[in-house]
Length: 191
Image (cartoon, rainbow, N blue to C red; front, side, top):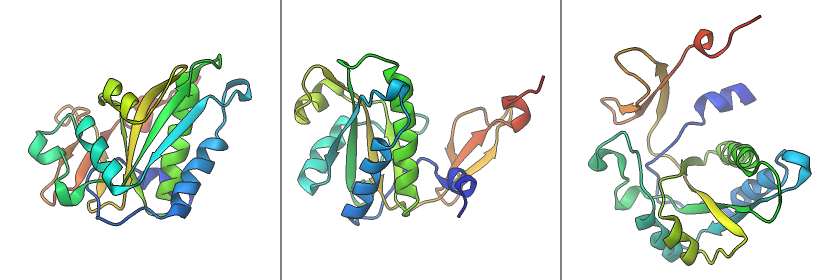
């Protein structure tokens, strides 16, 4: 599959098979962040890997799922939960544009996982104080995001963004995610 095909299918996934993410995929996620481009090569992004079932279960109540959907549709059921979480942490002692560097790292890690069939959900709606304590994150490090990983049990499709759909994703009749995207003409213009 080409990079563009990977980008087309690497959507956000929120329901997962109860199958552990193998260590080689975890290592690819870490390596993808390690190799990420970053401002002045400062390398301020850090990770905390949460892959033991009891630790994954401790993270679950501290994250929120699918804000555009009612909880009964957007929150995974007990047999649909991710089997891996990775905390994305910024070392604030290192100067630079941490948000840009973090964005690049997030893109790399989720694409590396998807290359092996592991879906992901980048989560910003998280209980940062509780997760910071649970994950033993200490100053000058700061929790930025949690990323859920697992083998998806649903599909996600790109659909045209229209006045009717707006930007909000929704579930179709098969409970697959439909993700409205603007047209290329709306995104780019030429001089």
